[in-house]
Image (cartoon, rainbow, N blue to C red; front, side, top):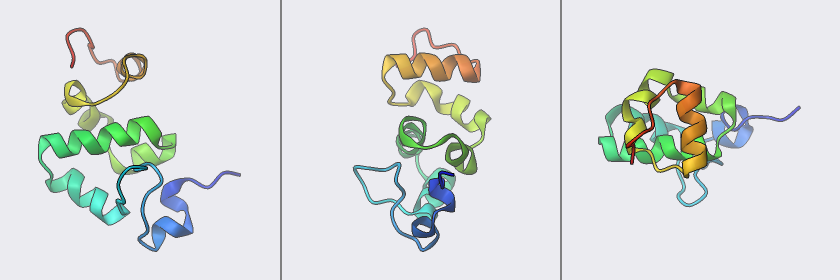
Length: 96
């Protein structure tokens, strides 16, 4: 059985999360960023979650309504944006 990033021993010890391949971000840093960060920084974090994280790990950090709220600001390839838009029932015309 695959261990998700939020349940892995490495993440629990405060090491970098696997779904931030270009920047070392810990679970505590991500939680703080999502709670207190600017809209731009939250969009950056959520974009990484939707691009790289396992399904369970995404929803361990954000709620669907939070993703919908900043959806237009997310940095996602068009195909992935369309897929997430359908799943979240977000209108993607004119987004980004």
